[in-house]
Image 1: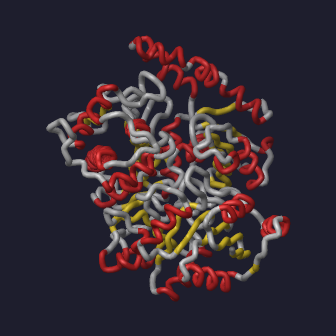
Image 2: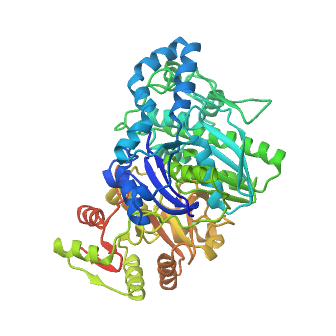
Image 3: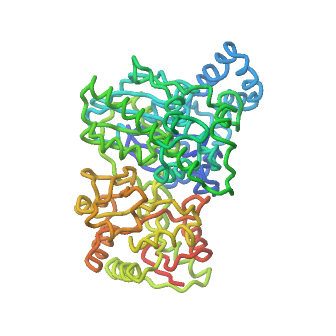
Length: 572
């Protein structure tokens, strides 16, 4: 009899839901797409309902409901134990008492929201991250690593996946020692939103110089971050965040210490000018993160001699870090789960709960198009209701028409098939343009996406052509590995090359997305360039569009020239 599991990430940021049947991924949806709150913390009720609809199941058909977070362990390890040992943590405990009460009653809350009496199964947060990366990797044996802000009390985990089993090696990096939380702290200090805008800091870093001297000191920016993230000399798997520089463990919404501010100056306000100083801070943080993670991975590789690496956790969304791992040639193959952040916890929880009851085999999944989908009948009804003129074309004609519009320099919004799971738009909820000239990037940032000037865009490339344009020798279907552009073809794709010559590449095959693969081939035949610029179908501060009404609203309100809704084409 098949085992149907509903997995939840219902606490913290990026709440989501997922359904698996005997471990097979059937549906996965993120709550932000429904409530329109980026990185939503709301209970994922609409996401659950959509997962059930996609799976053609009712809540009563579900055998196990599991959550990728154990509230009792969190209360014990994050609040009770530290409060006994440290008086400062006692006030933290008292200030969070309502939150603690809510976590203590989490099972009842979930049952009430879903109107069920079924027992809820709670799983370890980082074990869920590990499972979510290992099982879809297809690797029989792999080193499996999770880095994020915080689980229950752990900020990361190292494990070995072998023949469908996960053996955890190390759970010893504990709060407040967290690479993810430190990255969030610097995100806050530089004027952006923690747990939301960390990717902006990653994009800013290449403009900085970590070896520059900090004004008024004899130390470089990197020297200071070397003091902030201290590696254990005897055991590189353990690191410590020097509490001299942080405050997030003492008081909420403060993040950095007075000492940090004394050295680096007052926190930047969002609206204030970005200076070289801010760029240098971002660069030093990114450089130190990359050094520490690569040091740990090299240490593990030396001990266990495993050729494959699986990555998950919010830090695994840092494609510059992933590119550095690839560049260092530590592993032969790397797999990064596309919803590596906490949204992917719902998927991992499904797998962990299944593993408790059944054996699971690893199977490579590159297709994470698991969310909302709409029929052409509903789309047509929405267009007619809004009195929007449209044409319907078959795939071949549509490919020709899109390629023609791209060559004319048009900006095109695409809504086709099921929504992607994770923060990267991979074609089904994308805004696309030709990858040249360089000013196309500035136009998109300033006039279409309303983003910071330095934010890069991703190249979508035919997989068989990737090595002609990029220093990349493996597939990157989820746009999570940064690499260098090859100089001989750089000018042909200048709008997708960042200031440091890096590119966040998405490789495309006929298996991962047949419609876009044929479109990209069509564009290649017409332009001689096998690359299209791809960015998410949203504007800054908003979630990716989820349904055709979202797509129509975004198209009408903002500077998008053409809209594709399945096989319907609409022009302004």
